[in-house]
Amino acid sequence: MRYGGNTTCVEIRHGADIIILDGGTGLRELGLALTAEFKKSPLNLTLLISHTHWDHIQGLPFFAPIYNSRCRLRICGCEGARNSLVTALTGQMESTYFPVPFSKLPSNIEIEELRDFNFAIGSVLVRAKRANHPGVTVGYRLLTPDGLICFFPDTEPRPGGDRDMMEFIRDADVLILDSQYDRAEYRKHTGWGHGCVDDSVDLALKAGVKKLVLFHHDPCHGDKKIDAFLRHARALVKKQRGKLKVEAAREGMIIQLGGELDSGEPCRRLSAMGPARPKIPSCHPDIS
Ligand SMILES: [Zn+2]
Ligand SMILES: [Zn+2]
Image 1 (cartoon, rainbow, N blue to C red):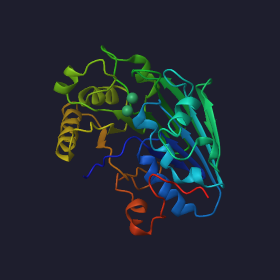
Image 2: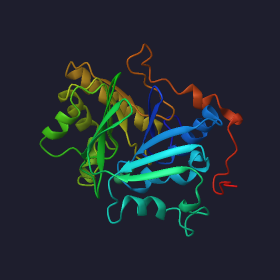
Image 3: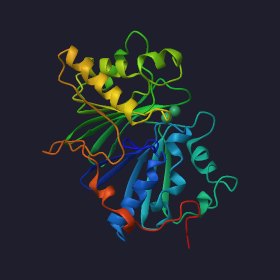
Image 4: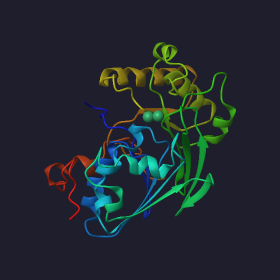
């Protein structure tokens, strides 16, 4: 109820550059917010996909900007576990699953499979790295003029420490990291490709990260459980006399880098919209 139940979707902004990390069900809310903000102005967006598991792509058919002819959307990611990225993304819009085929969308969408794991999106330098998760999965490192953000929504730290990973995320201002389980749960789910809070804190401390955001909450965990994860993570940092700040991801949370606001406050833009949101039917988008 407090942390939210949508699946992975994070928006990164620097100046006019808008980068979206993953297209889980949270993408629907973001699409409504972008539509309300940009109205009839052109919209240029880049969507980086970590992998094609459903909880990371399922929001795409419900993303209002894809029904807007003024929207240009570039989608980048690796190939799906069995099929190309194009097949994985467009397949979920075939008539068995969805009323509007991808080919009929009025927006301008390009889908690119990553060959080069090192590229720029406007002022943001992006690197991708394979994660330890079933199928073909990557995480991203985004160097913005205001700070470094690392995003690994689905990964399981390798036993005995992961030096490669530690170097990749070193000195990040914000690390958004899979912390689905506590230690006891993790013992029952080792090898599933998700992490535990203790390992996340350990990795973030060793890599000199400034803020860790516990991410990819288990659908069976309620607010109280996530509160307990957060208390536990902060206690671990205190015990090590670390300076690491820890937050648990929640819907609408904003973190501002290079500015005064760094509060992790809920996003007023989303919560203030209320009933004024544009009406986009959730299962029959109007493309006329
Ligand atoms: Zn996954
Ligand atoms: Zn996932």
